[in-house]
Amino acid sequence: MIKNLIALFCAVSITVSSAPIHTEKITPPKNISAIKAKSYVNINESNANLYAKTRLWRYLRKGLNYLEASGEDVPLNFKHPGGVAYGPLAITPIAVKDVQQHYPSLSGYSFEDVISKRSLYEKFAILYAYLLLKHYIKMEYLKMPREEVFDILQKAWFLGPTLYREGSPVIASRETRAREYIFAKS
Image (tube, rainbow, N blue to C red; front, side, top):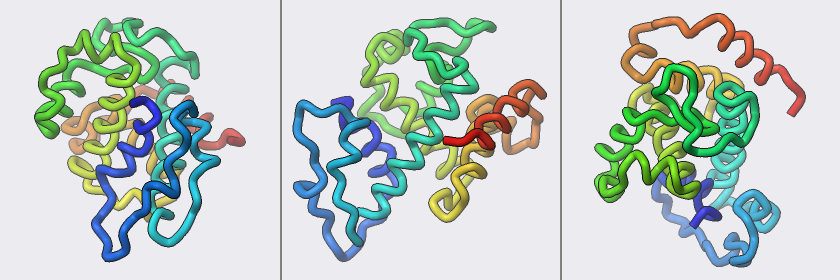
């Protein structure tokens, strides 16, 4: 299940094209992790979009983890200062509820389920990022530099969609750390 998480971020925004995507060409062996699976992806016209989104999600996730947990792989149930956000990406109960409202098939999971199962945590994080970028902010993020996408996502992730749209600022230390990540050699 976890090997498909990155593909999930990609799949939720893929538009249907006339050329079918042949998943058997890009499916890695079952004993390979999602991170190692990238070497099994055969880039061609029909799956180039998927590959670009996969690379983008990896960049965005790494940046969110850098901001929220200093790049550490903290336990999923790690409670951040303030007592509202949990884990390496600082997922909140409000983010989980938002995902569940847009994806009713996930409504059977409690917040405790999400912060106790890595695959669920990652799935909710991917879907929440997608909702922020595509649904709330209505970005054409694949047409933008990844650094710009990250800068927008990290602000919306921290503030939530309403405060982000109202133009509320994020704290200065977060802005500084976001710049560090954006300008670091990756």
